[in-house]
Image 1 (tube, rainbow, N blue to C red):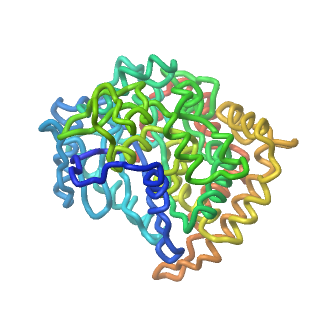
Image 2 (image 1 turned 30 degrees about the vertical axis):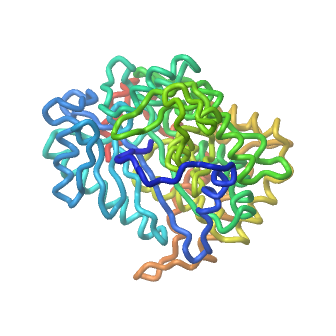
Length: 457
């Protein structure tokens, strides 16, 4: 989630509806300026007893952030406490229960993306060895209850933790017990955004299946392959889901703005603090009628903040976020941007992917989304068949897109090889969660704590 550091007193006040739309248009870039921003979260645990360390305890999250500064990261504070780090590789930030996230820098190719990921993991492993902490690449804590988890000292999280139980039964699990991998990608125009949004949204269940990696809850199988994805189905219906309007004629910046305006607010950020506006209307804010800031109108920064509080499967800001994947190990961190860059950054691949999904009806798309957390690649496709029937074809389209991009490293390798972990999943027919369940039923002999040894970074 976003880390806010300063209030921008110079941000323009929103005086017209057009300014909301211009914000999205401001993200338009020619293809040569398209970049790749990869975000990945991981669980932090104490190697001695596997507990999730608190912020303040010796060797805990505060110390972890402090030790990372030796690699050139600069501290970011909120309320006098370091809650993030900034540097050339982006931002290191904290999720609500201390999950550690790298929000990577905007990079030109996947070779740079994977090198950035490798640097980050080397740094946290070095610090972890000193502090006695390890890092798990999973979609959900396999054995921790909500009550066992700490809360990080970030203002927006306090507001969200209070609000979540009012609107869904699993929102606290989303905040405290899950990790994801995401990729942020650019668009050239409104029409380009629309096509990419539609392809990304239609195929997001495939990413969920290929990256499904959260089959355990409270130490036992939970009946799902991606419990993290299932959690989103009962988090907050006003700000999550498949957004059927994206596939309707006329979709564009204006229709997404209308959707975002209907998403209830969480907060307003002023002078270094978060003001609780949970459940209030951004439309009222536009009219100067927000009860917690009477008479004040929002700035464009407030609009950007508000957009970050909607959590659909694909999200629009001044770029598109692909949000369907569970957290995982190093090679799958690199594989997620490879999948989406291959599909969305080459026009031939984008057209081929759209041809594959354009005739799906919305009921079928929703059924696919609803069933994929449990069934993975066996989830039913709209019109018949199973998700596994198109998985290899989609990866082939992405591979062709990466080949056409022709971004080579110094050894002459293309970006295509970053898809190999996904090709292996399709070859074996087993998503990562199924491999973990096999281990649990086999050599782990029902002891889920073995996962700490086998999935540590």
